[in-house]
Image 1: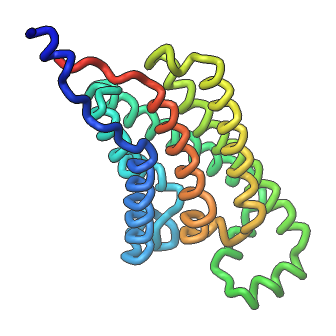
Image 2: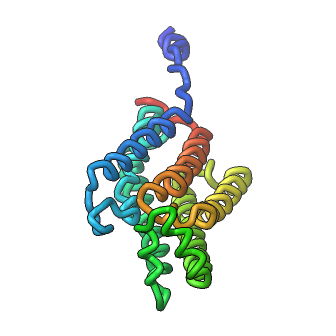
Length: 230
C-alpha cells in the first residue's frame, strides 16, 4: 500500500519552457532602457556604453535558471556555474568585437554616431570610402562576437548531461550558432551606424540575439529529465 501511495502521487504540471525566456527578455529590455534613460555612464560619452551589455546577462538568465532549479533540471551549483560562465563568455564576445573596431588605424569615423540624420546624409556622401571600411569592420566584429557568444556557451552545456550530446541537440546548437553568428554581423550592417549607438545596439543587436539564444537554451534544457525529488 505504501508503494502504491508513492506511485499515485500527482506530478506537478509542466511549466512552459518559453515563459522564463520571455520574462528574462522583459527584464533585460527594462534594465537596458533604464540605463539609457537615466544615462548610467560606463564611459560612452557620459551615456550608457553598449559594450557593458554583458553586465546584464545575469538579469536575462535569472528567470531561466530559477525555472531550471524549480523543475529539478539543475542544482544551485550548476546554475551558478552556468550564470558565471555564460556572463564571462558574453564579456569575451563583446570585448572581441570592441577590439576589432579599435584595430582600425583610423577610427575617426566613430564621431558619426553623434550626427543627426541630415548631418549623416551629408557626411555619407563626402566620406563614402571611410563608411565602407567602418561598416565592414562593424560586420566583422559582430560576427566574431556572435560566434563566440553562441558556440562557446553551447559547448559549455556538453558536460551537463547526455541530452546535450545527442545528434539532434548538437545539430540544433550548430544551426542556431550559425544563425547567431550571422545576426551579429547582419544587424550591424543593415542598421549601421544606428546599431552602433546605445539605443540601436539594444534594439537591433543585443535583445534579438539574446532572445534566440535564450529560447534555444531553454528548449535544450526542456529535453533534460527532472531529477527525482528526495
